[in-house]
Length: 147
Image 1: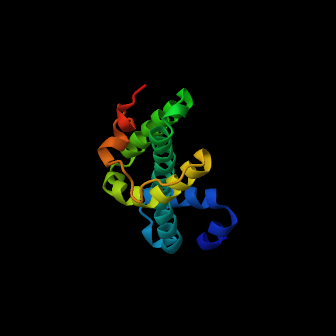
Image 2 (image 1 turned 90 degrees about the vertical axis):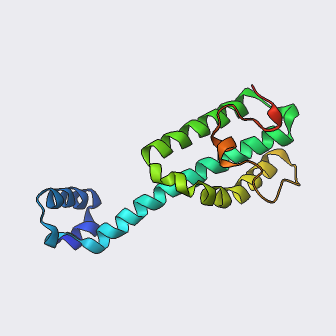
């Protein structure tokens, strides 16, 4: 079975074969188009995770700020967890730090949708009211309300 067919048939075996090819410097045998596609997908996965975590974080910060009477340990725990996961991701993939502003722009409309659905409120700001430093600051809670 050739390497391109292997990609379609057994992806894990294809990966293992490529690891071996790279270790042995057998570059001419590499299935470059599929390898490039997989590497690009890996980069997209990290960006998607950052956006996904920001959606949850920002939604909970909005709920925290705009529905203070409903503040709970659950919301606080979610904020803490998302920040920890984002910081872990940034440690693991430092180049994502330069993508945070872009990720916030992508995440914010979805975060507002989540906040609207979960609170029934409307009138959230058109742009994210929290800057990057605030989003990642474990002590920051909107309106200086801290738990």
